[in-house]
Image 1 (tube, rainbow, N blue to C red):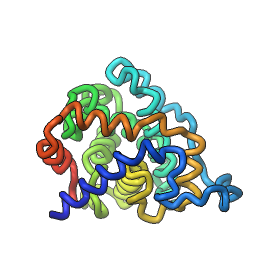
Image 2 (image 1 turned 135 degrees about the vertical axis):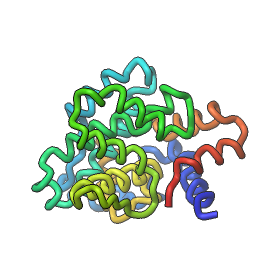
Image 3 (image 1 turned 180 degrees about the vertical axis):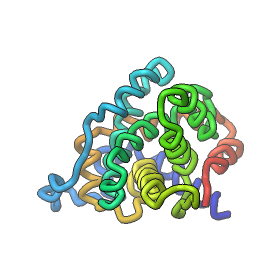
Image 4 (image 1 turned 90 degrees about the vertical axis):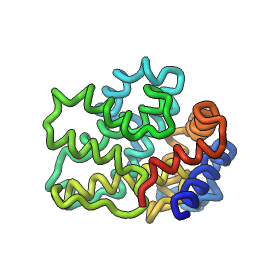
Length: 232
């Protein structure tokens, strides 16, 4: 029942996302009241590690590349907010690892045309980078993809606190952008607004809603597919 409720929240966010795409007042936007505080946050409009991987995936993603890239940039920007300073000090390339994983985190929607895309996205990552990236980093990237729809904190006893922190930072960031702030943990409203002002939605949420209808026209089967990617 809890999973079905979470799916319902995500579906509602996706449905109304494109209507409110540049004015997410419903999700905490302050409409300029706190605009001066926007500059205190980092919002990426490019990131080399992310863009390098997206370039290699461009043929698979096709015309949706711009909207997917902007989604990835917002997730990366939110990840930076959630990542603890202690993690950055002990794991200096954490953001590079995150950016690489984020490029692949939903790509299975396009490569495999499947709403249950976590496994296929992970496999795309492993195929592309498994032989060129250290296994320790591949393991982290793999968990970033697989745990992105986990509601509660993820802890792997075989990973360091910093590695777990990175996985959870991306997990929270993914939720925040997927729901346009309906589920944003403690992400500040000014950062949410700044991200959507500086990195436009480009109809990403509308595209996901359309893909859900296309890949699974039957509502019940569509919900069941979405439930499979959720973890409590």
